[in-house]
Image (cartoon, rainbow, N blue to C red; front, side, top):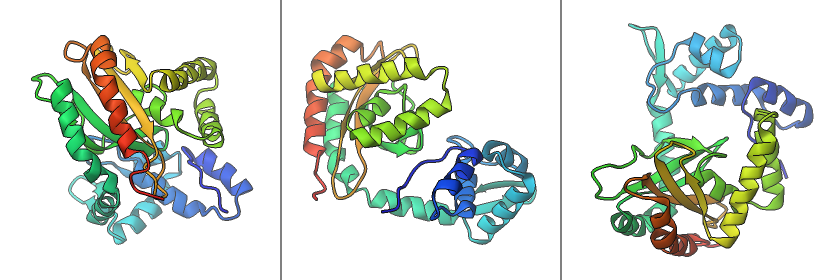
Length: 270
């Protein structure tokens, strides 16, 4: 079996080439170019892409030219910048369409959002982040600015911690190594907080993030495995602390969120 891993820099790509004869470096670098676009950004120059991908500008120029020819990027001549192309949008639409768990979860997420007066989100792992693939907002006038496609830190968010909590030992060890390499000095404290979150998931049924992502934001999350070969996912509920205080989330929302995740676990079948 070919082992799939996540690589976050050109150094990681070079290391992968040494150990993995099936790894295609050119393809990896092309995907790195596409991944260099961040939420809320529309245009990037070759120079900006090169800095983010840690690649020579000459290499990036060839990659962006190829991706533009294929429709995955679009070049705006007036400003000499690139934006994501329609071919990539089509692929994203197909990928989201294949996540039938979104449709299955949507009505229950809407109900929980209305009950909690907070925001309920469903997310999958994207490298070292969790990316929202579905979200429902409660009726509160003050809510989190969350939408499909946005991402959250995998180690500091309730979503990421819940995702980690349902990984197998082998999967978790691989992810821990990536996080350790990201910041070796901070890793001991990061690992301690993640291990505590895993214990929370076992005892409380959920993971918590109270004021860690943003000072005045509280959230809880539950991880689950949807089945059908899909990787683990996580579902959370949170909002500004004034609307969703920690005590309310743990006492009133937690049982409902845990039950929702339980119903989604294995929902896609074998």
